Length: 104
Image (cartoon, rainbow, N blue to C red; front, top):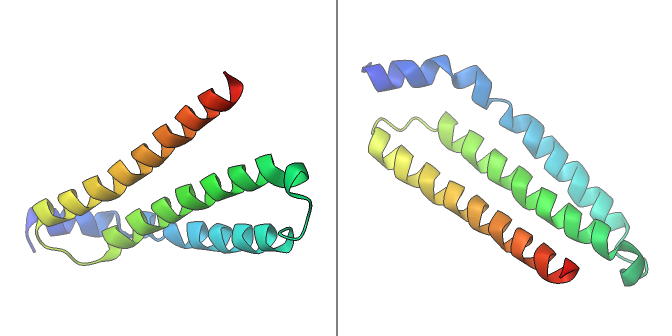
């Protein structure tokens, strides 16, 4: 094993926490699905917050799963993590911009 693989092996247990993100993602999906028949204006804000939280939990889950895949080349892993992180950042910026338009 080279130095990169050794360092990644030490963090293996930390990235198993992604299972918690998967459980929370499933629970959030079920809770949002139960309220789809409600009045839209009553639950609009709750639904938007729930969707944003689902995206954030899915992002955490994908990052955790990526770290568990045995990829020997740190460059490939870094590029994939960068792309997933950029998606999360763009989604957060979109949410902030939309929130600013709603308040302004």
